[in-house]
Length: 459
Image 1 (spheres, rainbow, N blue to C red):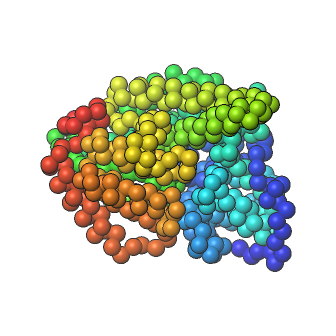
Image 2 (cartoon, rainbow, N blue to C red; image 1 turned 120 degrees about the vertical axis):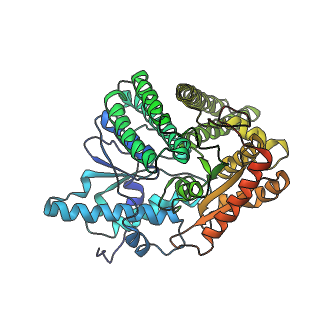
Image 3 (cartoon, helix red, strand yellow; image 1 turned 30 degrees about the vertical axis):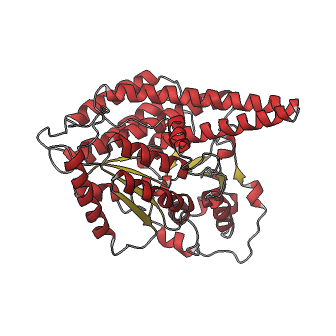
């Protein structure tokens, strides 16, 4: 790709934000395969032409237009959008119109570099002829990932509900795969099955998501779980249970973490990765905490107008969180009635864990809140090892590592840091083999947690 020599910055304000998706083609990054596809299917049910970007095929472009100091996911997502644009130009020729696309790239506030991805990528896109017309739709944690402005006002609430439901359903598909694959009757059965299952659920969300007919979606999900359960070979004995936490993109994106979950399974593990739903619930929970604190501050300062505004916002975030947790519990209850998959964490419980010995604080923020507390919770619950997956130099995850290493040593639970960039670390295989040997010894000495909530066999 040949770029322009002159780069302007005016579109940082004009072409990054919330735009009505209308008749645009919405380009969704493939962070988590199931989540991206079910979210896109939900969009299509609302009349939005959403498609999932091919991922990791444009890494040469992502690396060409970054310095290497950026967070690794920035290189991946930038490469993905540039790769798409190149292919689309080749396919359409003169008919290619960048203004017909919206690149969906949410952001987070705070010290994490994630909050700057879309700004930097906006600058890069603006350096190419015509790509300043390709808008970036940027949801933000500042307003709890509000979807206001993406669709007509009367449809936004229904869209938010269906979108959240699709992401939690994607979490359950992930957990179904991780529960089944280590015990499959024949190699490859689980992967082939889950790919078909994903496409089936895509059709469900396109047909029923906008109608909020969630019962039909859950009925189909139960059928899929029952089919997946039949893949399990009951003669295969239980394996050590390994929990995975860390930065959400790299731990979810199979190419960027070099398929670490599959590698752990190859060395004898059953793995449970942290969910997408957990992060969305955390965003709502943290927004609620912030508004409550601002409410009490306004009250002490006798600023009654501000107090009223913060109360209104707090109520909105409380309703969001209450609805999300209700739907999440409903989905997991239906899923667990068919197969003993792992539950998700309650965010308030994770905060209580951190408060016990002032280990860390939700006031500091970032994914370290979730990772530190989740590692401790899983270790106490009987997991046989914990892995922290993150981009090289990631601040929240290096903070997590510094805090949990001595705690895991004290609890006698194996722990592994797994940092990734675009290179292959020479000691990676040896580190994972060593970690899994330790997990096997822990499993032999202590047993493991069954997904029903106690230590013991899982079949």
